[in-house]
Image (tube, rainbow, N blue to C red; front, side, top):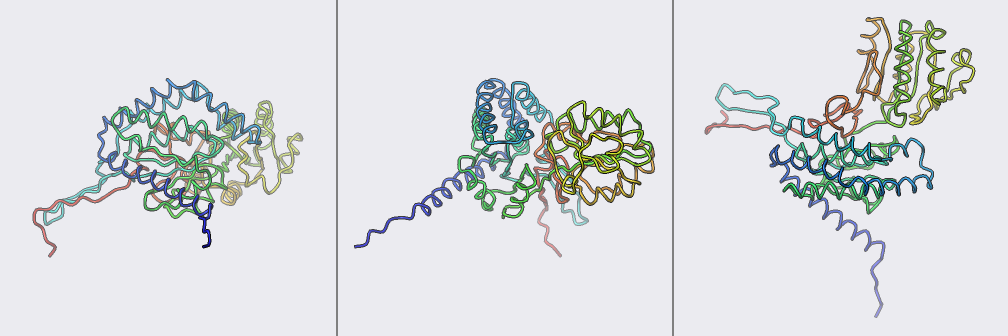
Length: 431
């Protein structure tokens, strides 16, 4: 008799699917309870999360230190290492952001529109949770808490894939979240992770249409594209930030120096940091020396086109690739243009439709820029670093959507809801 043994690869795949389907089904069940939760119940759970984050800060920092050490040994970029880093101050800020979510208005049950038909039937469109929100992200442990907090307040469960770079940190954070939610009387199973199954876990999450209602990727352009291409679950696309600022001919020197510096240097590894600076040729000799001197004093490497290098010889030559690159580092691409039209053309060609800004004293040019630039956030005389859920008053953010359906720009509580129509009649039949 032939000895037939099971194929280990098939057995492993079957086990993976069984385990992950079980977790996601549990999240789906938990989402039904969260959809019925009162605002007071959800706020109590959020408060417990903030308290436990502060109480377990040493444990979180220790896990994060191990991730950072592994990241350095594996050659993780400076920008990703910065995003990965959690210290006591950053954990405190994350806890504060959770408490900010407590203070926000609960969107669930809000009436978006309503009217009574001539026959007396009353119809209303109300906000309801999405259900289970999946998230795939990399080297961003703060996202673990941000998404869970916003999902909880909006009545959703979450299924998380936080990436191998932050695996130890995220494991502790997920434990904190589950414990805190359970302690408040809501189901801790509302927070699930697939991190322990690595890329296969992520792939399963992308195809779990029976359990996951929407998927949100956050990370590099390559990660986002992979999720968009592979997922069968509906995706809300967030985008890389090839962010531009245009110094118009009338731009004030003090604003130009300060805003360019802030947009590039304050935190260069994030998606709303400045990556390309365009300067009107009529103002280049006036603005570029003070702007670029300030940047270089802060360690910025300037990548300049030929005209920029004539005014600032220490700049390295730009390449075509530079204009399309999200540097996520202290590198900045700088070019001189001869008109607002040329600046707009450049932005249309290279923009990832995240954030674009103009510095100008010309009201007509400001309004043209606002009207013609196609991006999730368009600014006049402001740093691009303002494109952020916390800065916009959302407490935290799920991500910054660069698509045009349902959600665009920083995503807060309303973007984690859908709507349903409620119809109330009294024996009405359609004529």
